[in-house]
Amino acid sequence: MAPEFRRFHGRRLARPLTQRRKELFEHLLPRLRIPLPEMGTLDPRVPFETPPADVWLEIGFGGGEHLAWQAERRPDIGFIGCEPFLNGLATLLTTIEERRLANIRLHPDDARLLLGRLAPRSIGRCFILFPDPWPKARHKKRRIVSAETLDWLAQAMADGAELRLASDDADYVRHMLDVTGAHPAFLPVRVGEEESARRPADWPPTRYEEKALAKGAASRFLIFARRPRG
Ligand SMILES: C[S@@+](CC[C@H](N)C(=O)[O-])C[C@H]1O[C@@H](n2cnc3c(N)ncnc32)[C@H](O)[C@@H]1O
Image (tube, protein in one colour):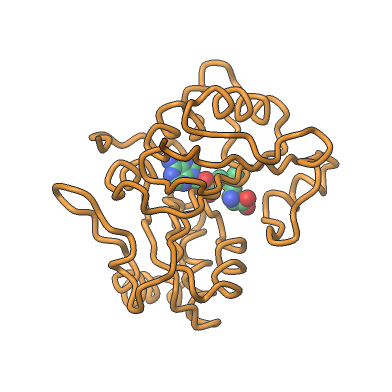
């Protein structure tokens, strides 16, 4: 079931958009925006010009560096990026235009509004990289990695599909391991302390990983898989 209310808690705009970026919002975003159906589910392959071999989803892509990197290397895959932060969205729109990336579509809002609408088994990989940590006890319920998000992902993800999670916040990493490890639809693939301290080769650094490195914080790169449905 799709969520009926809006729960995004971050800032939508940190600084004013330049004229160039405003133009991208007016002309490029409408062509790339995923239309959410009023009723029923969305087949996420439909918004792409050429039907992709698979659809991968990134939640909270920030400036979109990871998403653009993946999209450039895998033109056979359709990518959906969710990000309500408008400055980040504008950065990715600029990259899409400059690098002529044809295989990205966007949901410029709270990912949870899209998750409940995705057709079952339609997503082949999902990334949630360096989500806002919400360290204060009273804010922890705002964390995007939650049993509720995992329930929606469990429905939308195909059997064996990878769920990739990363954080430099030790408490959030523990939370990711606990909540995803306890979910019946997900299997741990690469979660051991040593192996998950290294980023796999097909996983580029994000801006937040670089910020973490600059302040000397260690990051963990976790991989789970959607358990095959019997
Ligand atoms: C700490 S930043 C990390 C950005 C990027 N993944 C990186 O590693 O550089 C977290 C991002 O998640 C986005 N975000 C927060 N809540 C979200 C939600 N409910 N749906 C989609 N994105 C969300 C924020 O706007 C922010 O850009």
